Image: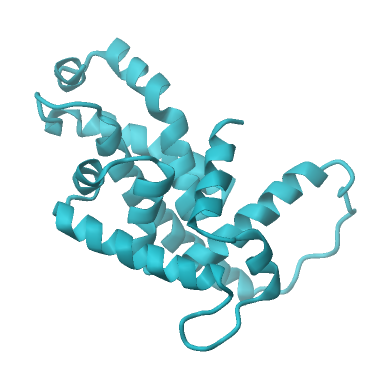
Length: 206
């Protein structure tokens, strides 16, 4: 597979997309908390993968860590772009009210609410800790694969993951680590790292 990808074999690249598009999308969703941003990040990930296919090492295992490394970068860029757009919109007058379609979209709104609660907890982590948590806990990469995806030593992955788990545990206990109570709603739905993983693994099965 690696040799075929390096050589620009389109059939091999289509196979690569079929194997990993879902994982790339959900990884981007974990880091952005936004469906449309995740879709864009996924598209940009495979476009970048095609353009940089010659950088793939000829020997090795799954190309999933390589793709998730690219997706991590694309999701980071999407978050930066979103913050700029939100800053611009904050300076604009509010839009006129629109008709409520809650009955037709209740299921999707509930999904978005749960995702927002988890993402709110994740935003309290450092970006690099959030990325390694998403790779190791939700995407299921081992330390070596996560290190490959992020371009850092394995020891760095271990320390970041340990720090992220400790921080997330404090959040799930309803504390920020500075003696401040967390919002009541978040505590009910983000009980622990296990809940974090379970929610996103559930998203991947849909």
